[in-house]
Image (cartoon, rainbow, N blue to C red):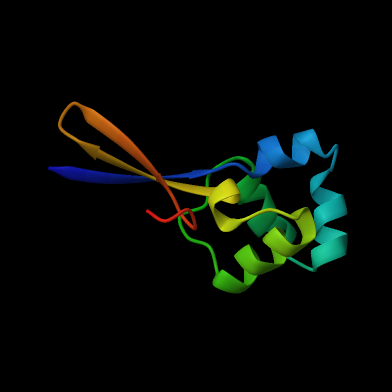
Length: 85
């Protein structure tokens, strides 16, 4: 059985840059609720436009922000998006 997990790294990146949710919200125009869900890794989906805006504002790649984790049996394999698979 294959289980796919999503992991968002927004809180870590924002922490490194000393940014608050309100800073990112004001600069990008992204809905505060959306940012809050991403920050606390509670988002079930993300719009591509939102990803693009965050990457542009934070100066990072999609793979820095978002990680797809495949869990098969006992083996966990992390695949970062935007880094060739």
